[in-house]
Image (cartoon, rainbow, N blue to C red):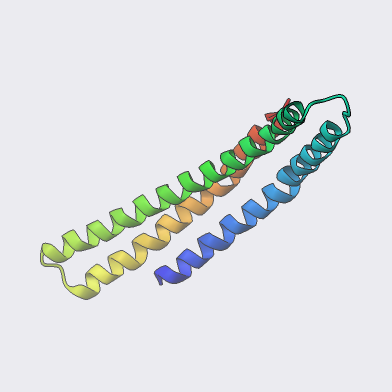
Length: 138
């Protein structure tokens, strides 16, 4: 049961990341490459100046990638905390003398709820990320 929930969440996160990559990151990559190319076209610039120019071109993309990575890590952390809480409750129930079928049912209902709760947060997270990404480099 937990594996199915994990797969469902992973597919939703992958879909969200692909959407952000297609709609935001790819455009930033294009800008970064065009900017870097223009740095190389300055025949009067020293090698150090060209490298500094290229670093400035790459900075917005690096910031965007870090933002996406951070958001996904926070999402995964929240899901892991929720799952650990469900596991802890099940262990506490078992320690309190509850029967295994009852504890299994508690666990089987808790983990999917964690997955559903987190998946319901994906649209807001996506919107927040896209808004942050659109402000980078402006």
